[in-house]
Structures are given as C-alpha cells and as structure tokens.
Image (tube, rainbow, N blue to C red; front, side):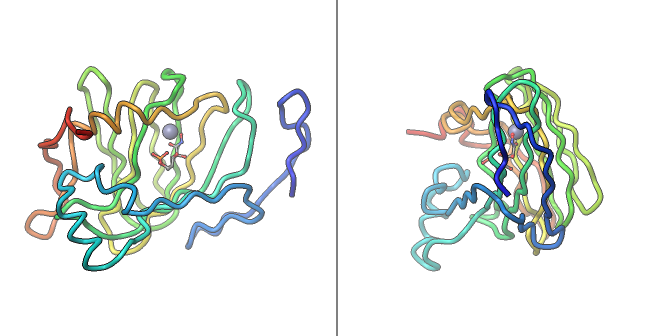
Length: 202
Ligand code: PAN
Ligand code: ZN
C-alpha cells in the first residue's frame, strides 16, 4: 500500500497490520537493521563488544519497520521496534536512543511482546525508567532522550507513535551516552551510572 501525499501530507486513509508477536509490519516502506559491528561504541564496555564480535561474528541488536509518513507538523508517525535479547559485558541489548530534533515533542510506546525497560533522561539530569511488557504503554514526555532496553530472553517488541515533525537527534547520545545503563547483577537487571558518560566517542 503506497501512501499518497499531496503537499507533503497523507491524503488517503490506510491501514496496515503489525504482528504483535514478532513485530513484522505488512507493506512496510523502510526496514532498518542495526548490528553490533556498528554499535559497539555505544555499550559501556566496548572491549567486551569487540570480544563478542570476534567470538560470535556480527549480530543483530535491533530492527525497525516503518511506514514512510511525511515528517510534517500534523502527521503521526508510527513503526514497529524490535530489540533482540542479549548482553554485552553484562549490559543488555538496547536501541541507540535519541532526543527528538523538535525537543518538545512527546512519544507513546505500546509494548506488545517481551520484557524490558524504557530509559528516559533529560539534559538537566532528571531521569526515569519504566517497565515494558505486553499491554504496557509508556509515555515519553518532550525533552527526554529515550532508549528501549531488552532485559528478557525474547525480542522486546513495541509500537512507538510520535508527532510527524519530531525528528531524531542522535548526536549527543553518540557523543555522551546516557547517564545510566542497565546491567545484569546477580541475575537481575539493575540501573547503574554509566562509567563512560560524557566520553562515549573518543
Ligand atoms: C522510535 C525509535 C526506534 C529505534 O521509533 O526510533 O525504537 O530506536 P533509535 O531511533 O534510538 O535507533 C522512536 O523513538 N521514534 O521517535
Ligand atoms: Zn523517539
């Protein structure tokens, strides 16, 4: 199904299926797959990531199926976000995470499968972490960087919905990281300070 646009807007109603168990979207326009090979530096222990890569080869960390809805004020964008289970040096697999380019825009994630957390942090240092599990909706207010983290042993699947003109700003997370990370300790997920905060790159 092609979304028809006129003056950069969606003009034809449409619907699509998203399989709540595996996250596959029917008739998607974009499928993004992010592998460890390109994400090693976002983990708090990049050496553990390199060791993992040498031992196991490259591995999928997360993927996103999207409809190409215009990034315009008034539109609503949505996708299916699937984070694989796994750990690098005790830190759970997660998405890169980002602020919105229009920082005041909020987002709603509806989780359909798996188990994990949404980590949310403001530039000023305030942070929050909310559980994600089937049937749970997480509201991410504006000005919060956000990242989903899979602490379970199955894919963590959610449907994020956000304003069309929100945009994605990855730059400060790539540079500084999040202040907090989620690691496994004594068999349980624990939120701790990120020892590499402020120096993720270089
Ligand atoms: C989501 C995310 C998706 C992938 O659609 O883009 O979960 O995560 P990264 O964008 O951090 O790679 C969203 O938050 N959109 O605004
Ligand atoms: Zn977002």
